[in-house]
Length: 452
Image 1 (cartoon, one colour):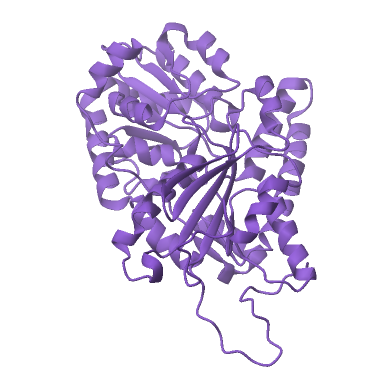
Image 2 (cartoon, rainbow, N blue to C red):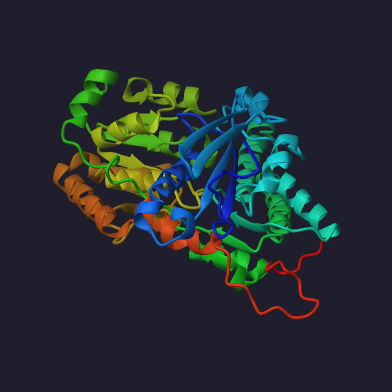
């Protein structure tokens, strides 16, 4: 890749989005989010035709990959895969983690490529982000031209780590008092939250998915630096399909005579899988005839299979097109996770016409317009409470269909498309602000001063 594309205009910002996760067909929500934004950006010249050079931006999204390669989506949009320096894949076999990241403190290949871009958009806190911040500090010490640093929060890594730390402590040290496990988990969360805030403090703007996240980070960074970044939905891909159930029965052998409860995501404790598994076991013991379908993999996969036996079908990780068909063939989407910052799988399920069941107070409930009518919220993280919430949907088809219809209506009428989110939430942040009047001795950078 050259320093700039031949058509590059200095009035068009060159944006580098740093997604330090392995990109593949079955990647999770954060990777899919940026794939959707990149695809949407390919059509920007048609939707925003008034920009110099024919497009409002030049976009490069960097992912991790098995080998270095470039995938051109349009003359002004490309995806770049870089090999990790210190991959976390070596830890996957032990706990079944799906998301592979780069744990190195410096990525030399990215360091060569980043200076060609005007805007560096951080989405995580590992190798890519650490490299960007170090380069920015180096430029500040030399009084050289500096990029605009932007960040977005897609995963609550401190909370996720604390949940996982508590799970591991109880698994590896079963004799310890729960208070000791909680103390260990709280220390992990607090340390990672401080590290995250120090990294975000280098950024001009930080985008978050919820008002609660905006308030929390606003207290640490200043409310004027934190703005909302919504998630979109592809309504053409995720939609109700009356023929999908028959295909699901034919392709995967799921039962045709009982409601199908779907879970999509990583099969581990951070997503609430043990809670869901036990609730379905209780539901079965109380006479409820439901069948669980899972799309994903993780540390709890064998436990789910042992507990539910013939009442579960584990499909493994699925690419988006096949996952969309699975959504449309199921009836209920049960998602006990409290670690999501947004939970795009909930939006995908609602767009597909499923009755969603979610924990009360979780960020995922923000997809609901009328809780109790277009989705069910469960007041307690307790298997019995979840079994009680699922049972009416399983045993009463009319009640289930009413929730499904309302979910689909909410999706069509209130959930934004990826095009809309790109234009309304991202472009205003990426586009250079109007230059302020110059005064003798003033800096050329519009970024707030930060200690190097």
